[in-house]
Length: 115
Image 1 (cartoon, helix red, strand yellow):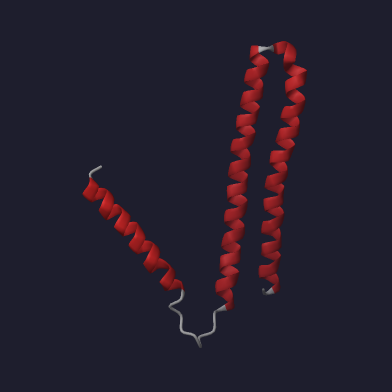
Image 2: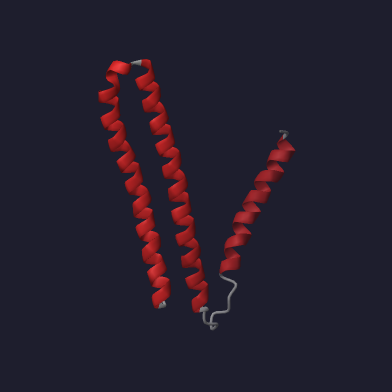
């Protein structure tokens, strides 16, 4: 990538970083925010949180299981020593997904109660 292309890319990024936050403050000072805006954002946040947590947990559990099974396949005599830490790790990974579910549930409750 040439210097001019890099410079123009960096300038576009810097300009975007300077312009986009100002849009958030464009609302008039005396205009009241809509309560549905906050509720919508909390709902969106809850959905994204549980989605990312489920995706991350699934990927983590898949990699952990794959590595454990690969280790057992290479050395079958070590299966008991590999299986116990693997199950413990899977439980810890799953607990993070459950924490995200609980947070999403609490956000949903806050939306239903009206903020």
